Image 1 (cartoon, rainbow, N blue to C red):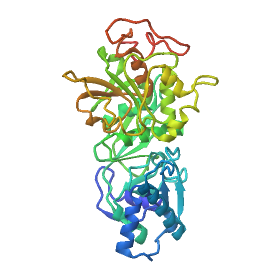
Image 2 (cartoon, rainbow, N blue to C red):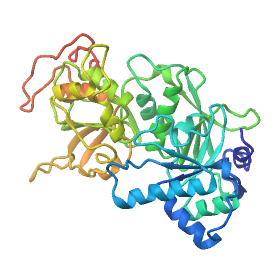
Image 3 (cartoon, rainbow, N blue to C red):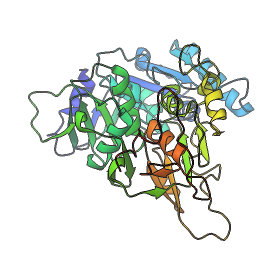
Image 4 (cartoon, rainbow, N blue to C red):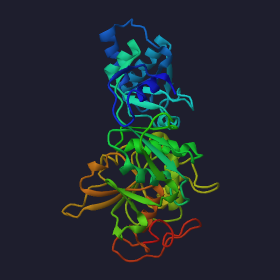
Length: 418
């Protein structure tokens, strides 16, 4: 553990917040969204010839697609590149989703304190790093002085035991954990039984996207720190649906008609997430309007390259043949920018929507939104109902079960036991 992170973590007992203290982050990320403002403030308040305090700790990152970017975004990319060249800083240009996260400098196994103007980085969080969110003026001060004020909230330790059952995914674990995390705290996750690093990374991303916790990081517990541990048994999980502060097992829910299904968004639209849905949808046909929204333009481009199985159809073909609509990548569904949650004109009934999107679902005030894993959402889309043994068409008439080699929608899946 780095001295900066250790200083911040040990500034007070885990069950209480610390006082604001000076810390020198191990890594400072200057991104394309807030970076240009930080550079302007640096010049205004510290002068254009101010040397960088710790150049080896600075990482400049641009995610701008120069082929499609507007002129102001291209200028931002150029300004960041020129600044990095001037001060001999590390500069990374990565378009779309980055599997390594926004902090590839953070080596695996090292627990660092990272300062960024963006949200916490799930890839870094899975490696035990903590990202503190700062303002552009703080970034300018960090460039010039190398340190900033930080105040650590209470830390909630979470122990995950066992491995996930075959019919569940890390999304179900996130749905079960979300209501148990303390509001405004940092959650320190320890999952010793997981031998898949991608599971831990995905869990951090899902919880960072929509949980009351202020920060999520995965690390082993320090033995000298006392405190209550929240214990979660992953082996006992089942396919679940999240609704506000409640997690429902799908098998125990009352039969409910579903109006829309939304699979994707920035946190649940990676190719790995969409593969989970495609494995269920291949060979089938959805019974309700279903939107597929990749996380980024990078993931959109992969829809034609990634196949469900060797020799099988690619993801785009599976989704189109299943009757799904391919939506805009990113956050459109979460903030209802594409209007997929609008109820029909003159209809006062509340829509029931199943969505894998985990962020900003409260903006859909007119709908009852249930969050699900991509697999669960796809199974529900095929039958058009929660807790239904038989798929129904829009008129409510029973239709034959859709079958293929891996799935019997009528008898398998999350609603089979209800």
